[in-house]
Amino acid sequence: MNKFTKKDILAAFKTSSPIIVTFLVLGSGYGLLMQSHGYGPFWSLISGIIIFSGTAQFVSVTMLTSGSILMAGLTSLMISVRHIFFSISMIGRYSSEGRRKPYLYYALCDESYAMLSKDDGPEGVNVSNYRLLVTLFDQSAWVIGSVLGGWIGTLLTFDSTGIDFAMTALFTTVFIQQWLDNKQHLPAILGVAATLACRLIFGSDIFLIPAMIIIIGVLTAARSRIEPAASETATALAATESTTDSAAPNTTGGDAND
Amino acid sequence: MTDYRHAMIVIIVMGLAVFSTRIVPVLIFGRGEKVPEFILYLGRVVPYTAMGLLIVYCLRDTPVLEAPHGLPELISLAVVTTTYLWKRNTILSVVIGTALYMFLVQSVF
Image 1: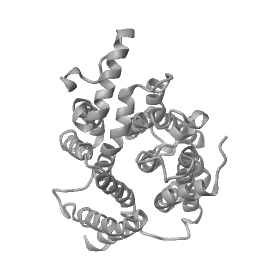
Image 2: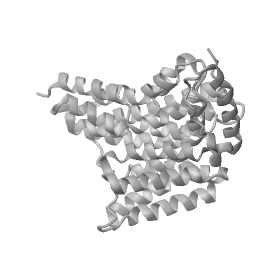
Image 3: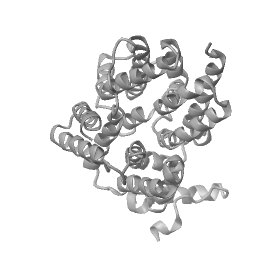
């Protein structure tokens, strides 16, 4: 087991700080809502540990008392389908995480993903410790916020309308930073354009599914434009592998280097 | 009397549903000794498309055709962008942007 150095902890805390602030506030909003439906801090606590998805948890509040269990499951699948996309793109990064993998994937919320998918942490930190701590800090902030919300919520009156904009703002800052760090803007433009187009065509319930399919399709087709050098290596690799494994599909597209 | 058994089952079922979306792709593509090259490629580029997807997802129910026509969102996003380009401080931009947005939707529009 890697020792957690002070540097790891501080770096993870610094990365998590915007999320901690957001989650404490959003979480208490959730705890307050739960309280008003007759579910106290204990319920917010176990829900934050078992479900740990802000959107799914807010939706779950009205389903706790009544409503079909099948619908609850299907609704959360629909809401969380974007996580498939996030998990797939973390497989390479998390491939050597060993026993930490189950927790890292289980608690991979949008916000932790935004922070952990962009780099391997600041220089000099143990990246595995850093990932674990960022994920843990984020979840803890959410759970603590929701428990506090349920606990002190009845004492405070506070109009929290619009507070969820914090998530939009957070993703926007990551988007800008990525834009500044990269010369290749096609993936960023594709993410906005494909999702927006699908939202307009398919409505607000299922649009993420077609959007993700289109995004993966375009990323596959445009690979040689997005990363020319890496694509050549991959094609060379695929060529050597195909002699030993004829069943392997040629995913790189033979036209890339013709 | 609230039916706590039902609530508990709902939480567990929803938890399993959410967890499956996070873990099933890993069980399918991440089991082998070597991660497939195509999955590694997705790992390198998807984070750059995912932020745009998340931003649109967050704003999916913004009323554009009726008042206030997404103006609070537009103004707040402009402020988030400007402050971030100026200070490069995530927490500052998030706090200012959110406070402004809350003020706009609660008191102005």
